[in-house]
Amino acid sequence: MTCKFETAGNATLIFHEDGRPVLATDPWLEGRCYSGSWALERRLTDEERQAVLDADYIWISHGHPDHFHIKSLMQFGRGKKVLLPDHYAPDIKSFLIGQGFSVEVMPYRRWRTLSPGIRCMCLDNENQDAILLIEAGDSLIVNLNDSPLCGDAGFIRRLVRRYPRDKTYMAALCSNDADMMNIVDDAGRRTIGPPEARKPGMVWALGRTARSLGVGAYVCSASQHIYSRADSIWANPYRVGWNDVRANWTQPQIRLIEPFATVDLTDRSVTPKHPTQQSDPCQIEHDFYGDDWNERLQPEEWKRLYAFFDEIELLSRYVDFIDFTVGGETRRIWTDILALRRPPETLCGIGFEAPRRSLMKAIEHGYFDDMLIGNFMKTRLLNMSLYPHFTPIVAKLRGSAGVKTAAERRAFAWRYFKRNPSGYAAWHGEQLVEAGIERLRHVADRLGIKKPLKTIYRRMLGDPIGSPSPRG
Image 1: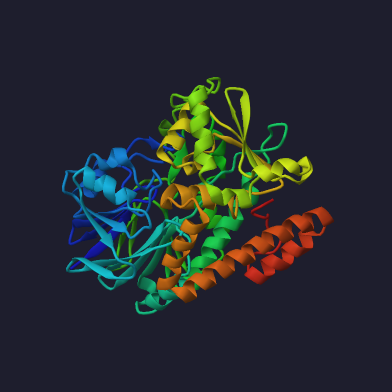
Image 2: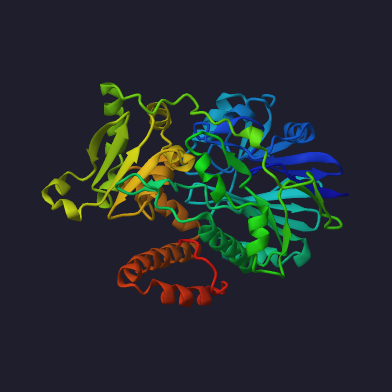
């Protein structure tokens, strides 16, 4: 028996046994997503496409359109076996069953045999994402795609130790552009630092994760997309590519495996699929995907926009107002009506400037995260950040899990706590530490002592001293 896997672009991995495709993950075969903002970095070859279509099983990690790509899924024959994480809301399962797919929800931390030599285990998490562990022969592949560990680090670490270290692999997001970067000041100028100041930190963090899990190799994955819209192509230089990973890798004991490659799990050999790692410029369309930035919202559309945010009760504790500018017209949504009594300089708010068509599509489907990830919408922040509250509440809780109220959030938290209490506590402790570090960073910047504190922090993490900061 021989096993191998290949990376086919973005988060699509294909696992083979004796030359037959058994499992393909997060199939994105063609087309664009996030209102046309993202395209595949390279078109799939005919062989890659056919292998994905012929795989016995498809696994979909979560609802982001570069993972749950409906246009691609419609190319599969009805009855195709689809494996899903046990996410909080059943939306993806219900949709696929309605389309005629054979859907199986994978219980948390249970092995599922797919073939004589391949089995897998799914770890869904409260980020409404999921990690897939694949045992192929005597090898283990930890497919993090773009999921945080969410309290499962210890479990994965213990599992990795059961395999020969040189036959353990981690496939994970290697870029930091898959989130809102298009943040502007009052004059409309982007506040993001230069690409070379952000990339090293992402790679260092990636290396620390691989080292902490104890894997023997890192596979570049979940990042092979390119910005295609005329109003988002500015973000392409911020993508972390293969050369950036190689230049900033600080874990020499962990083997690097380039994207777009086939890995033979018997002899550990790696075969590149393309002579270079250059992106395909033909994937950039330079259009606005049907958006007209001068088009205004109709009165009924403003009502729907107000209603979308008004029902998210969790926001009022952290955000006082949200301004939307569409077609040159700006209106304010108060999330906390009591904030009207407070001095303006004490308010916490966000301003979004977005095109009508894409904005209303996101509101209709309930996934505002599509607007944040696309990086064509402009965002202005007043006395606050998108993390740790706004994006998780709007994108993860409301968008993916359907959680809008405090009571619903308690039920949501209990669901994840009761199955892994220690992991839940550890993960939330880490989040509190991160939030504290973020606050300290802002204070240090105001006091003019950011640089020495940054050096101390890097030394604690084991990062290179004297290199650019990922945050500028």
